[in-house]
Length: 166
Image 1 (cartoon, rainbow, N blue to C red):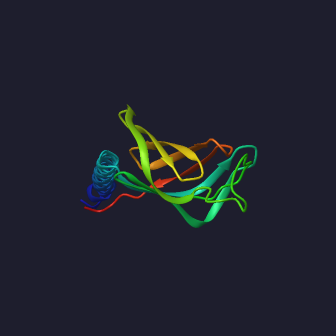
Image 2 (cartoon, helix red, strand yellow):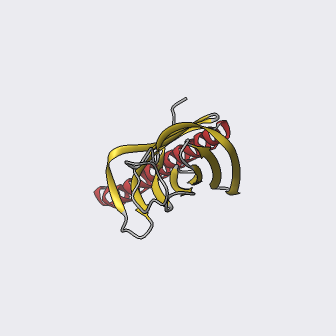
Image 3 (cartoon, helix red, strand yellow):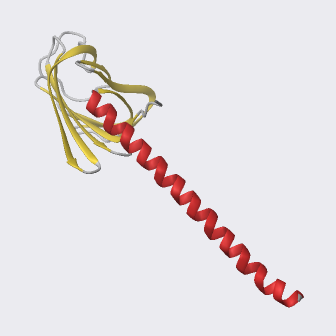
């Protein structure tokens, strides 16, 4: 009898471990789907915030950002609080606003490139320059922001979209 129990005990433990790992996998998949639906909804509503953690200036090495920088879109308004590093061609004395401003969108285009990827193009006039933001976002919230300006070199940022609880 003891031998049977000794042989069956590892088998029972193995079955229990498989069941809990399957439950964990299902929970992880459900959480992933929830995040993907929230990202899609925020993009469709044009109401989202992307917190950036790294900048990639043209001609300079990438830099990690230690302060809180972000790009926020609320309907037809854009709030850009992003650092800038690069060559400026024709800007006001002292550097001007650069990428720190709040303004109205001149135009926007939202496309779903693949099932898990969105491409947004936003144009805004910050009274010093006309800027084009191209935002590449995946359904897990990871995002890349490319900023193109007429009077400055381009720059890009990587970060993550905040997923609002509803």
